[in-house]
Amino acid sequence: MDARGGKIPLVCECGSMRLRLKIGGQTCFSLLFESSKCCALADGRPPLKQVESISIEELEEMASHMYGSLVKAVVDIRLGIVVVDAELHYDEEQYLLETGSAQLDLWGINLYPDSYGDEDFIEFDSMINIRPAQGNNSRDVEDEGVRTDICHIIEGVVCA
Image (cartoon, rainbow, N blue to C red; front, side, top):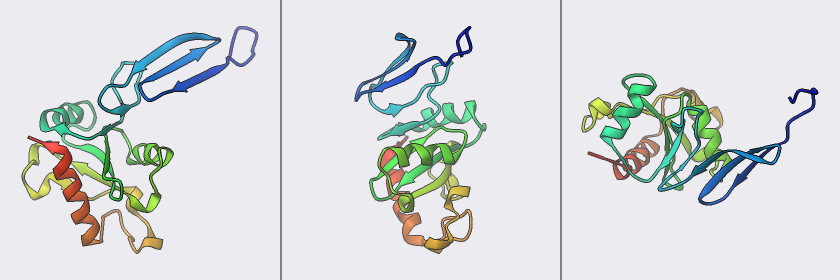
């Protein structure tokens, strides 16, 4: 609200390469997108990031800012898209839904950078995975075919 109690006009302009936040016609924030799609926090660090390729070192850095040992990720198994580095799987899921993914294709996982190369690297655990209508009654990803798809996508995105 402004000093008179009125609403401040807030405009977000999204393009393929630039995001601008305008308040009252004046640009207050601008973010240039380079190799990935992202959103920014006030400190400039992206809270979530759609990645085509990411290193273990980048995952370790993300983990150190968030939970210490893990990075939350959501995978679209139909489109092969991976979004990482949000506090909640729900936020990553919502981002993907807003950008054209279908709910039935989205699965939440946790990545443990210190366990890269081991079976413990990917943990198939998230609240967004509870989907009785799809036959998934737990936080786990119960379908082995879906697990395999997730593993293949993550193998193609994460590099040492």
